[in-house]
Amino acid sequence: MLEWLKEHHGKLLGILLVVVPLVMVASAPGNEVGQSTSEPVRMAGGAMGAVQSGGHATVARVGNLFGRLGSDAELARENEELQKEVDRLREEKTRLIGVLQENARLRELVGFQQAHPEFELAPARVVGRDVTPYFRVVKIRIETEAELEEGMAVVAADGVVGQIHRVYHGGADVVLSADPRSRIDAVSQRNRAPGVVEGLGDEANYRAKVAYVSERDELRVGDTMVTSGMGGVFPRELRIGTVVEVESRPGDLFQDVVLEPAVDFSRLEEIFVITNVN
Amino acid sequence: MPSVIVWAMAMVVMMAESVLLEVFAAPGWAVQTPIAIAIYLGLDRDFVSGGLILLALLLPVEWMVGGMYGVYSLGLVAVFFAMCTLRANLQTQWGVARAIVVAMAVPLHSVVMLAVLFLAGESGGRVTALIGVHMWTAIPLVVVVTMVMGRGFARLEKMMDSRGGRPGLEF
Image (cartoon, rainbow over all chains, first blue to last red; front, side, top):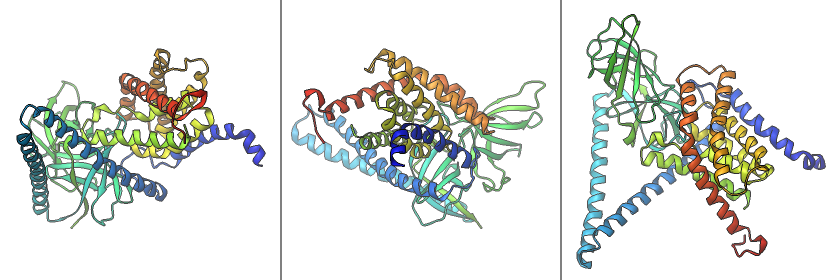
């Protein structure tokens, strides 16, 4: 047996390389968002999430270090005593600004919680992003013992972030509303014109389009789109974004509407998973 | 260089991309390091060690990608096989000839992904369109990253391999 394996190990490896991804494809729940994740995948993802969380903290620290080196070079002309003092004060200021900014973000989040007492929210922190240009997925680490499930809505103080795609031990993948697989049932806050917000997956920004907006419904640039509550994922009246382009062509059934998300996805740090609605 | 070290370095490279994309908030700058790694394994490692490393990377890669399981991996396996086939006819350094092959590997990866999505009945929608678009736009970034990474790995390999009378680190 061992001899046979030694003789054919190259062929066996070639077969395995093809079979393993095929098994993944066959056992995958599909390309849709919010379908259940198997236990082995949850465990493997949990371990990787912990490593990535550590990596995130390290890279952030290294980034701060580079920032400080740049400041030192700029101050090299000044005398040594003053330079030390300036460095110390700058470091303190940077730290305080960071604390103040975090404080402001947390205040906003607390405000969100107070504005929506009916939601049970689980706080989470963004630690990574997907490595392809096709999807818009962020990886989160959950900061409580809350049980996450695929399909749960994820929000920030400004509005809708997306929904949970895969759950791991201690974390999850969140598909942003800008992901091309994301579909959110929406209405215009001004005149209740309905539509479906679909991610565009644009390389340069996080915009989405509002599909199926009838030619008879009047949408204007500046209108706010909110969740309609239909579909069972997102509660009603959560801000999704603002209309930035409306184009209607004679003879078409629907208008072309482009949406700028309410949440700045490039600066996502703290977010909330809605684990239950009372 | 031992396969375990190559695997660990590949993991570090992929994790670094994911974390840097998050820290510097640059969604459009995904350089697809998994493709670069598959190309390196196909061109610079022998079939068995390269294949084993790639096999051990498939699940982490899928975790990093966040798409439908297996689709991205099958593309990487196709790229690896193609690189193994071409290796004997290519220059051994990371020069222009290899850059051209890398540029061809990116559309190959996308075509395999599209084929798998089509066969799995998931071909509709914007994901397919995006894969089609990035089939071409991703080429420059992937070429640059693969050339830099390939040269870096090759240099490290020389440092660790003291054969041929070269002074170097021994493990």
